[in-house]
Every structure is written in structure tokens, then in C-alpha cells.
Image 1 (cartoon, rainbow, N blue to C red):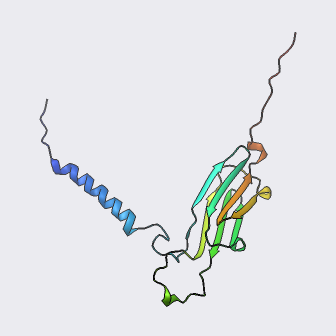
Image 2: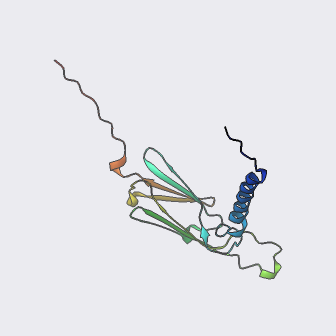
Image 3: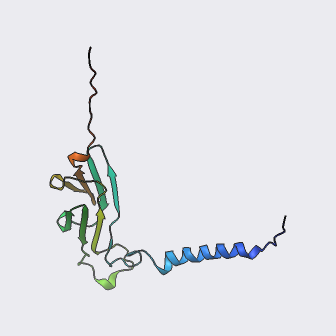
Length: 150
């Protein structure tokens, strides 16, 4: 059996490295659009599957339905929107301006094949909901087992 010398600062260095990474990831390289509300940025999406459909929702507060563009090319969904800044308020009258304005876009690969020509898009209370029916070939099929009667 050998005796190892304990170095208390070796464990602190790994904690320091972890804290450095945390601060660097959070403040030195922030997410696109996090600090600058007028820069082009990503749209946050929710995507889930039901028995028959793939459903995608995106929050677009302040966007008009006519300013939203949705395309499906192959297995890629692209959503683009523009939220226009209010022009009736002068720039020098603001005390604070935190809402985001400008163009937003997001492209994602769809996890399953869908019927793009049957897609439905609804816009209600600033939330875009896309309902994409699953392709027939991936919907579950029930096969009835038959028995031979003798």
C-alpha cells in the first residue's frame, strides 16, 4: 500500500475551470439576439408528435400573420418572420426598449416524413401552430392475426 500526498488546491482548480467556462459561455459568447433586441435571431420552437401529426409551435409576439413565411423543402422546415418596430414613437423618447424587432428565422430538420401539401398553419395570440400530417408509410398499421380453423 502506498501513501499519496493530498493536494487540496488540485480540486479547487477544477472548480475554477468550471466557473470560468460558465461565465465565458454566459457572458463572453451570449446566445444570438440575447443582448441585442434588434439583431436577427432564432425562433424558439416546440415540436411534438401525436398519433397522426407532427405539431410545431413558435411564439411570435407582435408579428402579423402576413409577415410569417413557412416553407418545407424535403425534410427541412423553415420559418421566417418579421416584427416591425412601432414608428409612432420617437427614438429619443424611450426610457427602455427590450422587445425584439426585425427578422427572425429558424430552419429545422423534421424527424419524420410528413405530408407537406396537407400542412395547416394557425396563428392565435402571437403563437404560430403548424400541424403536419405524418406520411402514410410511417403511420402505425394494425394487422389482424387470423387463425386456421380445422
